[in-house]
Each structure stands twice: as C-alpha cells, then as structure tokens.
Picture (cartoon, rainbow, N blue to C red):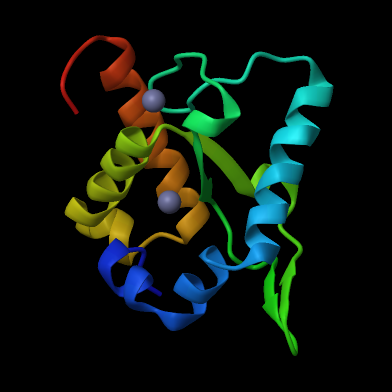
Amino acid sequence: MSNRRRPLRGNAYVTGYLNSPVWFARRDRWFATHAHTGNPLCCAACGETAAAGELELHHLEYTGVILDGGWRARERHGDLVPLHPPCHELLHRLIERDRVLSHNRPRRAASELALARLHAKLTEGGVA
Ligand SMILES: [Zn+2]
Ligand SMILES: [Zn+2]
C-alpha cells in the first residue's frame, strides 16, 4: 500500500472520514485526553508548543477507522500525532519524495522515520 498523499487524499474513504463529525469528535477527544496528561502540547515535527486549535492530527495508522453503516473512530491515542498544518504538509512531502518510505514501508514506520528526520531538521533550524 502506498503512503503517497495524493492518492490518499483522492481516496473517498479517507476524505469522507476526515470530513465527518465522527472524526471531528475523535480529534476533540484526542486533545482532551492529551490535556489530562498534563504534558505540554507541542508539534511533533518542530517541537514548538501550540494550542489545540493550531494543530492537526496525522494518522500513523488507519486501522482503527472503520466504515460499518457509519464511521467508527477506533484509533488508539498513539495512532495520532499533533502537527502544525505546514509541518504536517512537510511530513507528507518528505514521505512522498522518498520511494522507500512511500512504497516499501508500512504507513506507521514510514511516518515515524520521516517524522524523526523532519524533527531533526526543524529543531536544527535548517530547512526541511
Ligand atoms: Zn510544527
Ligand atoms: Zn497526515
């Protein structure tokens, strides 16, 4: 399965889910759960602290997303990673540009490798 963003975005399955009230509620629950940990909320790519409204959630796994007469948001907390919209875009571009990441790694592994690279670049003050 490919991790490239364009086919994913064009995929009615994912697009439909990410525009559904079920996902918006899951997203709110993710931020509420995080708030309970007492840990500062920060972007996983650049490491800057941010408010919930400033962050998107990237899916490391879509295995918890189920269509069963309606959407079921069964993602585990650890399946979702908070990112600024531009950092999120950079992450997808990094995966897309890398043939190994986009074609030869499961989504979670590809995301984690790309995120580690992006984090290293952004926190060094370099350009990803
Ligand atoms: Zn960021
Ligand atoms: Zn994403």
